[in-house]
Image (cartoon, rainbow, N blue to C red; front, top):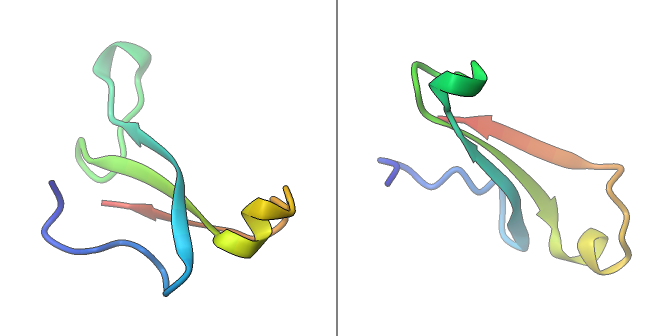
Length: 56
């Protein structure tokens, strides 16, 4: 659970969330998550040209 909502704006949805994983040597923001968002309309069109990320 995060202390804030990382969603960029209205009509953006989470596309992918990765948690930090020591065995894989994945570490974002001191052990938090890496989240990738896409606008709903772009997702419907399968257009992945504009994504936004947040690590928190």
